[in-house]
Image 1 (cartoon, one colour):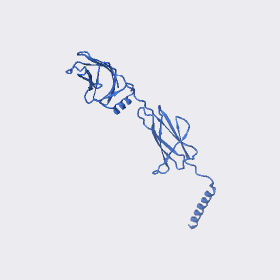
Image 2: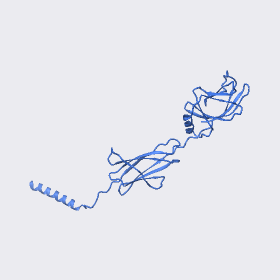
Image 3: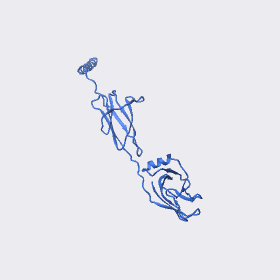
Image 4: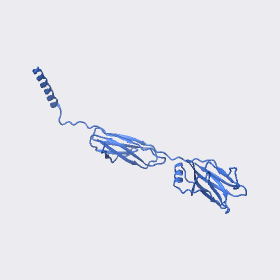
Length: 249
């Protein structure tokens, strides 16, 4: 049994020697291709910039990381080492000037035969155009009026009285509705209308003189809905005072 064991050992040793002797010491193990992943931002309506994040995994040292927007020229892209995960690098950059859908490609060279690539599409979300509502007329007949012709509950406005000074007073309907005055009616989108209201100065009422009246613009908010209101005309006539109104929402 000793001779068999020795033979086996010698045979294994010879095999080992043959294996080592056949290997080229100048050959290096091929570099493993890196992997790269990107996360596209979800843009709010009308937003023109978005933050892209991503991750690169590479056992080899990175030689370059480059970015291309809409198949344009490649440019160097900064990255940081992930201190918590080995062989991992982090990407975080903002794409600006977005006016339509755009593609973002990142190319990573870590010395492997093939570069790693990842491409995402950032979806541009346009703002929502305002929609014109049906014109209406408010008719004020007196302080004891109950026929509802002086009220429009859709946009939240009520012609509440005519003052002793000859002014027409308009309030919210219900009274919790507040107004924001505008210099003109040039707002064109729901998002801009909401922003103008939320950042504007709120008032409880307007008082206007029908003499020399010029069109007035303001915003009301009823529930979660915003309305761009244009009081186009205002006229006094005994027992039949009228205001013609248009609106968008």
